[in-house]
Length: 466
Image 1 (spheres, rainbow, N blue to C red):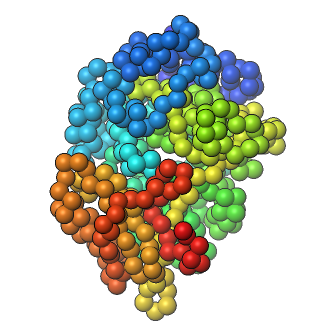
Image 2 (image 1 turned 90 degrees about the vertical axis):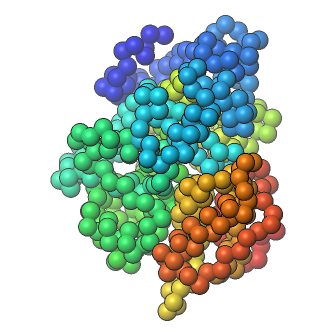
Image 3 (image 1 turned 135 degrees about the vertical axis):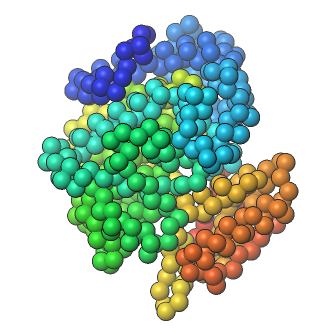
């Protein structure tokens, strides 16, 4: 394909609009051609894929012909996986360890994003401009379809300000993209402001009341906490759109947000590995951007799961990022593909997701009140603590936290604990939770039945947790 020679933001937007207008046959043609192009590119530039695909046909348009990959195998073969031979794991790790370089271009070309993840292995991701442009084009198109001309005019009347509720202090994809936009300057940078999710709620409410955003985008658990503040009358904003992301939302959750803010609510189901994977519709289904991604619900043996049934896991292929190809990658979530056309009229495949629910911790506070902390507040804390490979915070009593840490192989466990304890104590103090006891666990983080790690586990008041 020579498509990438002519791609730019305007072309990408027009192509996505044209594909959807023409229906699923046009979308599928693009998907098959882009998959074949990505497989050929991976074979030519990545030693890992060259070996993995050695027995496959010369041209592959059917994703089921490809072997399954996962974070453990790809990260374990990082230097052979990446398509640019100048990139190494150590270079990316050193770059991502420096908070002053968030949003800078790695090797002058790429954006770096990290995840702690729930699979037990940190992710180091390198994103090229093509990937970022495809994501921006698909998101812009979704925004226009959600709001329509009247909604866009309302947003303009409110100065078009975006409030991004993000994890700061690390190379997380949302904050890295935000920082990159600020570094680039221009009109887009004047419309954005990041609000750290670990900000104590009273201060976050005051700052949002002052900023008065037209758009509120960010982690679902933090948006749910802000919804309660809006219901109580402490938060008083009038956004045109609220867009939760990063964690699973029920229709009850999105309906509650819509009522509290009296606005349109649309969610995203995505991952750092494919940020543009899907966008929700008015009926609460996530529509997969199948012209630029392949999504396969599968059983435990990676065989297709029929529509209408929950899958064991889901495999995705990112058809845009050429520097670090994700092909038939096990994302680990359970999804249900809609068996009939969605009543919203969008021809793209529609799904519901079961997984990645946000676990909000609730603590008793002075005066009979309570304080709630979103899980991402803990995630950002431990991610910026040197030497933490994996963490798990369990609320074993209303005012007790048990912390399980897996230190990196070359780290001093006692030094890592002291640093983590200091950060956690500061977070609690900032939220007037000095009375909460923090315990150091001897055991490492515990896996759930599905093999993932719940990084934050709320107190089980019903006593049902095994």
